[in-house]
Amino acid sequence: MKSRINLLMAGLGVLTLPGCKAPQAKEITSPNIIYIFPDQLRNHAMGFWNEEGYRQQVRFQGDPVHTPHLNAFARESMVLTSAMSNCPLSSPHRGILLTGMYPHRSGVPLNCNSTRPFSSLREDAVCISDVLSRAGYDCGYFGKLHLDFPTPNDPENPGQYVESRRPAWDAYTPESRRHGFNYWYSYGTFDEHKKPHYWDTNGQRHEIREWSPLHEAQEVVSYLKNERGQRDSSKPFFVMVSMNPPHSPYQSLDDCMEEDYSLYKDIPLSDLLVRPNANAAMDKAKSTPYYYASVTGVDRAFGMILASLKELGLDKNTIVVFTSDHGETMCSQSIDDAKNSPYAEAMNVPFLIRYPEHISPGVDHLLLSTPDIMPTLLGLSGLEEKIPIEVQGENFAPLFLGKDTSVKYPTGVLYFQNLDGEKDADGLVQNYFPSSRGIKTARYTLALYIDRERHQLIKTLMFDDENDPYQLNNLSPKEHAEVFTSLCKEMGAKLKEVGDPWYESRILDHLLEY
Ligand code: CA
Image 1: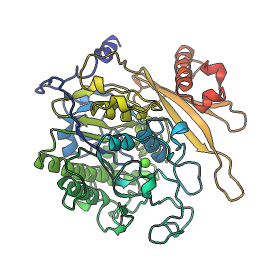
Image 2: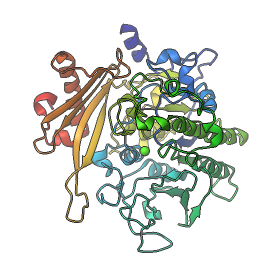
Image 3: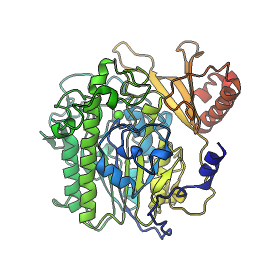
């Protein structure tokens, strides 16, 4: 334990890989930023975790996936073992990511859907793209957004939804709600991976017949090359790329590329589902080879973007981040729900960041929370003065850059789960129910669940992640009272600090000591 603490205290960059020189920190000059976040890609599903130098840094066995581009990229990047999606669900994560604020402040406590009018990105929130746009960046968004309440605003059929059915998941985002993104190639939510569609900057719809990550990578490459005058080449650029796979569906060759599926199709399930908490008897288990195939396809699309950056000579002055909005349980814990739980498979996401000559390649155990991402990227771009006051995350740029700093490593990060609250006569959800809150520390995971009526404790999940990394043994609060009390105390203090509804309503205040 002591060596682990020392390791954490010693700061970023201490685990520099053999053969990688520790570069000197340099003056910051408006770097480009590319932020790539495929949907539902768990941290464990990257091949390098089974490689020398990485295997020793984590307590899990990596999934048997082929990710050659990510493996090479990792060797040039700072790789975090413990980046957490605090609210591991699509829209809430994206709301936190863009605003640096937790779900009760971002405007997005629940997944965006036309039955949930109140869950939609706040138009008055200052997003990372607003800040970068005002600072002179060209800002482009590619792929899935899933941040707007779908309204009847189809640009080609005014007054109609973009989908024929209602409730609708999909949405068109008009210019007034793009938060500084001046180049647009996006959609709300749509899950036919080989028949995607996109609305462009002018609201024109494009129907594509190609696997969406590959199409999006080509669009990003075209943007980088500026083939159609997509960007002002005198400006630095900020690009977000949200690929939908490896998100479901993942059950046939309609969902992934055959060449990727062929890598996994003949491998026995027992060799694919390597996590001891996975239940191979579940119906969902047959999705495993398709899920891994989707990961491999995403890796190829990512590689196309990296190759283009290099070819154009843009790689040196571009910060590249690879991460995901949340993970995927894929039969772990015998649950069907891929996300929205505090289990490691759902909460622990990839986080790799490359910034040549500024960030030393290595591995670090920083517990990164989603609200930290916006201020950290602004800090890395030399814009720490422009971090909005409302932002609730930390700027970890000084740690990444290896500078002297008083920034401390967080000892724990929060977990949030919200469910639909009351509904009106039309079935429209009026508010949300904050069903669970929790805390993840370097050693433990704790989540408390309450009932709707009386807000009493109905369930706890508590795991010793250090000795039980697959979370097989739910610890009893009674038998581990000291640990439980200490985790509750830390969680209560953090909920108070962020102004969470649990603190506002003093939920479980006999345990959480706000
Ligand atoms: Ca998602």
